[in-house]
Length: 292
Image 1 (cartoon, one colour):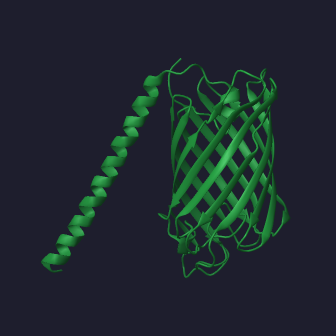
Image 2 (cartoon, rainbow, N blue to C red):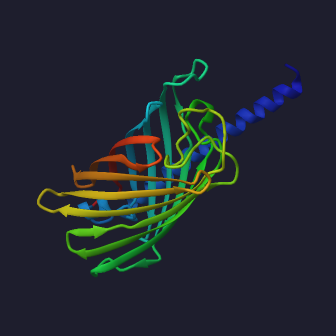
Image 3 (cartoon, rainbow, N blue to C red):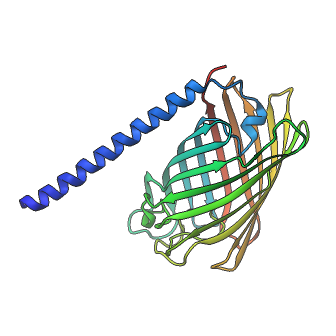
């Protein structure tokens, strides 16, 4: 290796170390700032609300079962930083274990990091102390192509997902969280409609751009005596590139297992449209930051 090549490799390595150190310091700063906020106690209403503005550490164990083509397992670590009950910054880092039933050149069973997701949400309307419409929360999520798409761990391109969530509480124990989102890419991806950005388990090459419109209609019942909640959700997705539709039914059951810790189990089942992703199972632990 000549001097120029060595210098180039060294500078690239040094840049990687600096970026990782900066990320760790920034993460520690957010943790410290969130802990210093000292919010009031967390309730089942907060834990079951997909647009809650509370700071929290999120951990999820997930499995994705496709129709006769493979199974993906994921472990996700995330952090959301809430600012003044009006803004929420988030980051999530997934790690995948992919099992393919197709020929992937000896890589049919591998593990590695997936696409990192970054998000921002704002509460443009916030009237939590009244019945009816309580909050309107637009958001933007961006996925960076950090996962190896040819091994089933990423889409292979940047994905952008603007959306909006409406928080409606017609009764003290009943809440609705209708959501609309549009996920798209500006270049070809190794992902198809109905998979929410997951890579294609049948083909490791890039095909079309990603242009999906999704609607979610969840209704959540909070069980105060049990300190938990139950949710039923209808998920609809239309792929403009493939001209296909996908409909899932999802059930969630969750419970507070501490003053600031919540556990939930989410199961989504394909029921109509183009059969591709069959079942999604997610077990989530959310630890809300701050002290009473």
